[in-house]
Every structure is written in C-alpha cells, then in structure tokens.
Image (cartoon, rainbow, N blue to C red; front, side, top):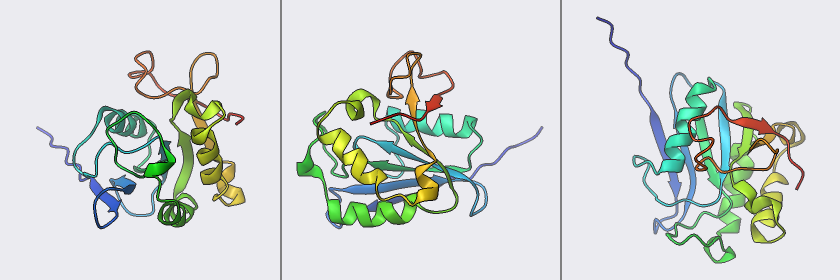
Amino acid sequence: MKVDTHVVKSEVFLNDERTHRYLLKRTWGSDNQAIVAIITLKPVSTSGLENDLTTMLIQNHVVDMGYKGYLVVNLVSGVDTTKKLSEKILDRESEDELLKEVLNKKEVQQIIIDCGLAVTQKGFAQERLKEILSLLNKTNQHKVVAIVDDDNRPIHPLVPSIRNQPWTLKKIKL
C-alpha cells in the first residue's frame, strides 16, 4: 500500500477587524515554485480553512494545471454576503499596496481573471480591474488571461458548463 501525503499551506491577509480579506494564498510543495494568481470579484469569508464553491473549483483547476499554489485577490476586499460589488467595500490603499507586491512576484506564472462578464461591461467592476492591472510590471502584464466560454466571453468558474471542464484561457480586451 502506498500513502500520498500533501501539506497545503494556507495564508490569509486580513485587516485587524477581519472585515477585509486582501489575499488568500495556498501553496503546496517547496517555496519559489510556479503559482498562479486568480482575480475574483470579492471574498465571502475571511477563513483560510473554509472553501466556498468558487475557491474549491479554483484549487481543483490549479492542481490540474500543474501549479504548486495560487493567490486569490479580489476586485474589492470587503467581506460582504450580498451579491453587490461596490466601492463601499473597497480598501483601495491597503489593497493596491499588497496587490502591486504579490502580483509582480517572479513565481506568479499566470494571472487569471475569473470575474465573468462583470468586467466587460462599463462600470465599477471594469474600472477596478483596469486599476489592478495597471499595478503590474510590463513582464506580468503579458501573463494576464481570462477564463472564457466557447464564444470567447469571460466566464465565472461557477457556471455549470465549465465547473468540471478544463478552463479555456485567453487574453481579453477591456
């Protein structure tokens, strides 16, 4: 009998009040191995142990893609149970400082947008994504792709048609 053992390190970057989750980082294997950064809409929890369905799907896909970990960053960091994406739950100064640092690390091999159609429509989500992408150095700007459907439209990982399918990743125009 063979036993496989895997150790997953989970780190959560929060504000003191635990109302903002700036970053969720999960890694396995040794340090400095290739990881992927995922840009999502907003966190639903401050926990580093619990998985909502989106985080579970992200981790499963990242493993299938061969990466040794991932960073989940958000358009807004405020933990809010409503579906509304709002500038009211944004902590721009703290978020942008951290995002500029982590998204430009050399071990980040790819930056994947998984916000669905929200970022293709004019409004807060699209403008915030542009702000985040402007924090990237030139090298990492070329690593940005989005999860897309068969019509090359950005799609969210929760959409049933792609939940258990390999992601199709393409550059998109905002």
